[in-house]
Image 1 (tube, one colour):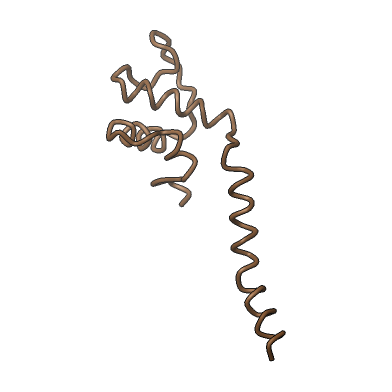
Image 2 (image 1 turned 180 degrees about the vertical axis):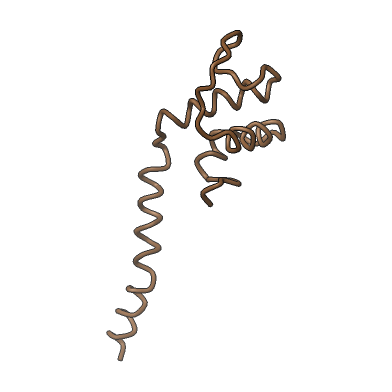
Length: 93
């Protein structure tokens, strides 16, 4: 009975442990497209509008609502890169 209980506990917590290990490994990584959105969000937050470079009005983002959400979070003092990594208010979550 003791071995069965250990096996049951292991099978219960192993997926959680593996998930946390993957988070530890991949959380520092980011896709460069995400930083394009962050640049647009930063400029929007600073009042420059949704532009990558000031003076160049090119729509280079592919996720308007996420850009606006990140800009609003940045305006509230929340770190946009951290909010992006954690998926705070992400349309996908």
